Length: 294
Image (cartoon, rainbow, N blue to C red; front, side, top):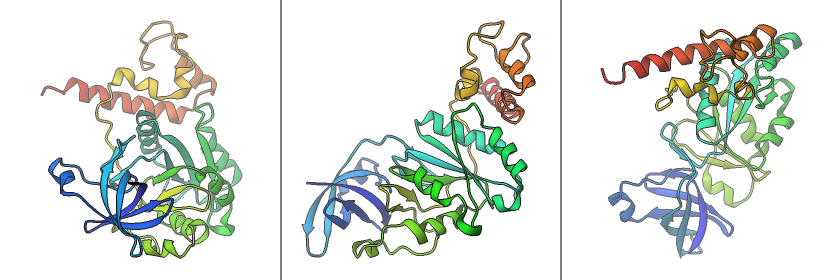
């Protein structure tokens, strides 16, 4: 059998990329009986039924590293979280929810600040400084002159990346620019029938640098189900390095005196924006926990 990667699935047919080309495959009924539906991003083994027509059957689906329901995609290893410099104003709470989603799933987060032509350098630095000390990578881009796109191209290298962020931040424009510049152009790639960005089907687009982007506007709203409020601080890298420095063990970093995190916020070492998002999420998760049996 041949190993491959599902690029997209439409109407029971799956476009699978392998080292020997692009194939259109169907799936065995055994998967339906098991309640398994192949999705873009799945690594599979398939049998070739017609080499000339590039057709085959998917026989095995490898265990997924992660899976998202909306959009339905598997084995993503990078989330590009898009923020607009302005218009709309950044939703930093959503950004933190996406960062936490990445942390929980072992996915590399990449923060993309878009529309930087609409803000000045000082405003750009203010946004960047929110994430100083987190270890997260930040890239700033604009469609005007494609500023920052070379750096974005480098960040996408070797990753399977899904773009996420609030509505209106320019995710579709970014995807269209990526498609125009870096999606592999070979005869076989025409089988994917790529066009300008649409939302009808989720598909992986192979780039010219061993990377892939998920051609979907991503997810714009999230709930943090399954996270206990008491463990939320472990999702904030800049908090983790202060572990053990608070006066009280198990400090929630909310009301306790002698809190190293709150002291770092006061001194400017930790972003107040990040801390306020943490505080809001903590209270939200605490309320969920208290009402879990009601």
